[in-house]
Amino acid sequence: MAVKLADGKSVIALDITLSRVQEIAEEIARQTPGSYGIVLDETGQVIAHSDDVQLGKNYLEETGTFGAALADRLFHKGDRQFELDFKGQKYMVFAEKIGSDWLSVSLINTKVFYRPLMIIMSLLVLFTLLEAAVFVTVLYNQSAKNLAVASAEEAQSASRAKSRFLSRMSHEIRTPINAIIGLDSIALRDESISPSTREELNKIGASARHLLSIVNDILDMSRIESGRMELKEEVFSFREFLTQISIIVGGQCEKKGLRFVCDPVEPLDESYRGDNLKLKQVLINILGNSVKFTDAPGTITFTVERTACTDEKATLRFTMSDTGIGMDKEFLPKLFEAFSQEDTANTTRYGGSGLGMAITRSFVEMMGGEIGVESEKGVGSTFTVTVTLGRVQESEQQLAAEETAGREIALEGKHVLIAEDQEINAEVLTDLLELEGMSSEWAENGKLAVELFAQSEEGHFDAILMDMRMPVMDGLTATREIRKLTHPDAASIPIIALSANAFEEDVQQCLQAGMNEHLSKPVDVDRLKETLGRLLGLE
Image (cartoon, rainbow, N blue to C red; front, side):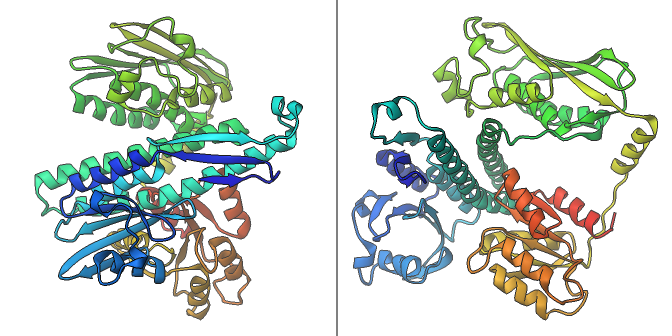
């Protein structure tokens, strides 16, 4: 699968191992009896099928068969999510494009109620091709000189193509993840489900969030390499910051039978100024690895202390120790390199993208800090992170405490317009909003969203949740059209981007088009509630 670059000579290609694709399709069928995983090319031919008897068949050339009925909906009617009834057997069908030509299709027997999420998770593995794909940059040049040194124009073209590719892949992967996490959250709220089903749903949710973390790692590395990653300077409660880390890591330790010790050494300020999200990601990356590579009974220790202080700045040192498997001293200089792993056997056992520590070091260096590690094989590891944060005046600390304490957001009775081309995502979002007492109307593309809003009475909609990529009219164009209407609410109604496009430039495009806020998929319900409450003045 290849994309030609703007210079007309260079290509970015995806090298796919078809045998592995077939293995994954077969794994899907084993996980859920009576269901299928299929990959079709643009002619209707079966590239992979969990029933290998079907390999090589062309469903578009068949008549009266199950494959022919499936191909009719997929190719002639263009459906991507539907229920297929064939000779008394009913299947839920989910199809996603791979590149521009192939279709990855899952068929779930409706008799199996909660298994669809597991099917879709397996298809995501196939869809992302993380196990079967290798990115290759092929540069075709006519002179020996160009073979030795790529021109600046070619490098920029490759960089732009890479950004477009990652942005596209981010959107395509996040869209089904959004449905999985949303459906999983809704299903878990059903108190009537059995303990075994609840356990399976929890595993599905954990797997979906792990896949999302891999996508986020890839995007973070892309932003770092391109220089688009920026630090935020915000006042945050340090006590709440440490509590959140302790809850996350402490829960991981409890599940694994490890002892977690959090030891903040006073004096520490109530609040600091800095990028708390990136600092939290740094610390959780390191502590998460400690949990991953430590077997029970073991201990994870997290210490924070102030090492220097002025009226305006404070230097904090975070120390994270574990009694895990440790590392050879010869490997330590390579630890913070991308995709660097000491033992491939451990990669299979413990998992991971190989990007976490490279991102961690980059974030620390962006904050002007330092990171160090000491480790001994079979004994454990100790990481130290030192960063300088801004100190906050007492009045600012009080304001920050008031903003985070006792926040209540009442959304009952609010009515929103959902612009979303994926029906399953719209259904998930509708259900989540209903749980908060809200109602909604759905428009399957930007043009319909503009028409629905234009025809509505003043005050009918309280907010608009707008996807960016939709057929007929995208979210950016739809937002501009809404803002130009003479409708009484056109200029003031909050428009929030709920998009799988998560790059910083995507955020800026949304704001420039007239949106009020950008939230990336999968939807974080708490953040959506906070955003709606803030924009509607309901806190």
